[in-house]
Length: 310
Ligand code: GLY
Image 1 (cartoon, rainbow, N blue to C red):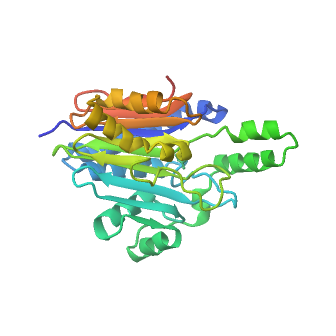
Image 2 (image 1 turned 30 degrees about the vertical axis):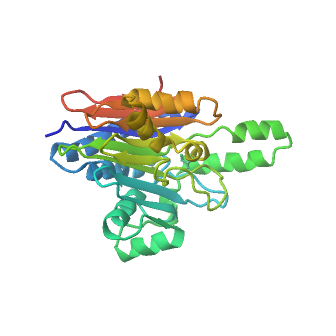
């Protein structure tokens, strides 16, 4: 019987007035997600079910940029991406730019378990969701006042006369992607990641969150990883799988591997990056190169840890 452990994140990046104002609510949201996932593990549930449950709790929470509360693309619409991976058999499921699905992580799990595919996108993903009766919601359910304001602000900035001001503001991204990694009693690891993407992004943009090996990876022989931050940098560095390689081939421990990949290998990158990882003994690795990362973990016999800033 293995020790059980779970870690979750709710995004990493720039700080903002909004985050400071709702710090307590964000921390409570992280804690609730941890508890929901931990309960599954405690009752001998699987790591796959635990990460799905934790991510669902964050997708349902309008403060986080996934599910309800997703960022709006350049057309003012919500397109979501998610993925899940089972470290026992390396199976995975993912969805990209899907609309109206209440919990994209659950659709990813259904694809992993019940289809011969790994990855469904856009209309095809929605058709499959309808076919298996996964909960759907109207467009308005996903759009929060906060995300609408961010979208409107970014749109306005694009029309500013001074390109310098516009660009510096556009480069400030308030990431809120969510993710979870878990270790169950059987010693199996799993990871899941879900996002609403970035505010005012090009229609059809796909970041890292649904890309296995970039924003999500799990392998019982090394670790489970969920990433957050600038998707384009995370894809470029194949971040989650690189952490696994650093553990397997460089023999680093989980924290060292996260530090090596984020700070050494990609230290020159201008993008925001944050990762959570778990190894088969339940040790946690957490690294972020930006002002804040909403994060927490819970291990057997220890109180939950929840933090946003350093
Ligand atoms: N990390 C989420 C995204 O870039 O879409």
